[in-house]
Each structure stands twice: as structure tokens, then as C-alpha cells.
Length: 288
Ligand code: CAA
Image (cartoon, rainbow, N blue to C red):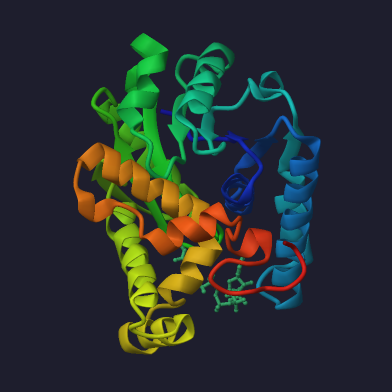
């Protein structure tokens, strides 16, 4: 099987723009796709800023930075990426939207192209059900934020995913400088099955008055060597995202322990979604 030369990345949000930059930095051409030109512009600015920072810190030469940026193209139509040898979807976490995109992916790309999704909790088997006989080439390729920094790619096989698709996904993740680790297609896979209840419990600890948010985070930071406390991490991920993943775990696994903490639900209802709105558990000024 020949190596991947061009990867199409659908969705130019935080995850999609991180995936396209990571591919480009590892020598793979990336076609960044988004229906929104504004989202593409934002991704392009993020790419430029990230490599400029690396050059400034002397972690990358100007020539390598220019080469990486030169490998990324930005398009609004999927058809303009049809020459790609790999496609990873990183659109909004909505199963119907993902199925619509997967049907378009199936119609657009060559029949040997792997159809990967960066979903954080939606069933790979369910997504694959919309492409019928092409289900063996559908797989979960779950990156972590910030993608250029985080080493893990969780590789999730749906019930119909072929061994060949899995092997090729592991090879591509390695070629992108990541460490692929397999997980089965159960709600939340491994990462969010473990992480989200931990974050949820931190909200309970806050709600029950066990400690202030700053102290909960500081205890986990210093006591467990977390890079960020769980409440700070919830703001970073997005409280709406945390809430929605808990709802998926609750619905799919049928266990009341996964129901989102009332305080988490309340903050989401109030529009306090974390970094992206300028206020979540903590206040970040300006945006919201
Ligand atoms: N893009 C690219 N590079 C970034 C970046 C970004 N968005 N954010 C930070 N960096 C880089 C910085 O440039 C810096 O690089 P150098 O070491 O080369 O200087 C490096 O990362 C460290 O950054 P900072 O010094 O600014 O800050 P830090 O040391 O506090 O690290 C962090 C920031 C990497 C985000 C760290 O706090 C961390 O690892 N936090 C935990 C992140 C985490 O758990 N992510 C997973 C979330 S769950 C998920 O993504 C999946 C899901 O399904 C919900």
C-alpha cells in the first residue's frame, strides 16, 4: 500500500485545523475543507501563528515553516479535495451531520481512501452504517487538543472496520508523529469514558462545597501531576462538549452515574461554555 501523500481534513475548527497543521508539519499535503470561509481564514491564521511561534523559539527553521504552510490548501468544496488519499472528518459532533458528510465523502473520494472520523464519542459503527458496503473503510481516528502537541491518536474500529483500514490508520498516525492506541467502539471509547466522569466529579466536588474551583484544580495539579486541573480542562474542552459527551455515555451505557452534574448543566444553559465564550468555570475576559 502506497504512503499517504495528501490528506483531506473536513472541518476547520480547533481539531480540524490542528490535524491539517500536524499533517503538513510531518510532510503530508493537507487540504483543509470547511463550508465557512471565515472558519478557513481562522484556521489559516492559527497555522501561521503556530509555526511563527515555533520559528521564534528556534524549534523550527523559517524554511521548514514556509514548507509546512505551503503544503496546506484551503477550500470550501469537498470536490476540490477529491485527489486526496485519505480523509478525516472533524466536523461538529452531530450524528446526522456526520452521516451527511460521510455520504458525500463516499461519493467524492477514490474507493481505496480510508474514511476516518475524529469523533470524540459518536459510535463509529453508527456513522459507518450510512455508507453501506464501504463500512470496512470507516474508522475512528481520535486526536486530542492541542493536536500538534498531544501524542495520542485513539484508533477506534467499528464492527465492520477491516484489518487493512486499521493497519493503515496506525501507519498514518505514526507518520504524523503520533502514538496510535486501539480502543473498541463503546460510548466514549477509552479516553472520554474515563476523562469525562472525572471532570463531572470535579463539578460535583465544587457543587457540594468540597473546595473552591481553584483549589480543586490545584489539588489535582500538584497531587496527581495533571497538566491542567479538571475544571480548567473542562473550560479548555468546552463545557457544552463535556456535557454532551456525558449525555452520550448516559444514554448508550444506561448507567445513572454518567448523568451530567446539575452545576455543569446549569453553566451550559447559562451559555458559560468555557474558553470559547470567555467564561465557564473561570472568567477569561473579553470574548463572551
Ligand atoms: N497549538 C499548537 N501548539 C500549542 C497550542 C496550540 N493550540 N497550545 C500550546 N501549544 C504549545 C506551545 O507553543 C508550547 O510549545 P513549546 O513547548 O514548543 O514552547 C507548548 O505547547 C506548551 O504550551 P504553554 O507553554 O503555552 O502552556 P503549557 O505548558 O501550560 O501547556 C497545554 C499547554 C499543552 C495545553 C497543557 O496545559 C496540557 O497538556 N493540557 C492538557 C490538555 C489535554 O488534556 N488535552 C486533551 C483534552 S480532551 C480532548 O482533546 C479530546 C476529547 O475528546 C474531548
